[in-house]
Length: 94
Image (cartoon, rainbow, N blue to C red; front, side):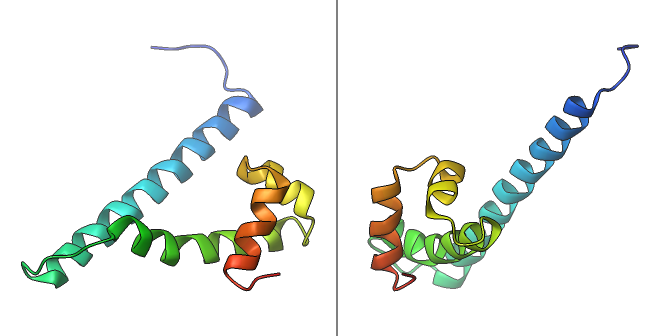
């Protein structure tokens, strides 16, 4: 048993791990529903379909979180600012 006291960074790490697991679980469940709804029918370009559904709300949320600061948003997403701008334009978010 770990008897070391829990620090603020430990609780932050736990919170981030929970968020990651929740996002992973949400995607897993959404994909299971998608395939179930296909009912055996073939699908193509699934990656593009998923990205077109996931990227816009992700970008909107991060832009709101950073108060429309593209440099902070790019850093938050781990993207180059130019790449972020390209994606914002792609989804008519700029």
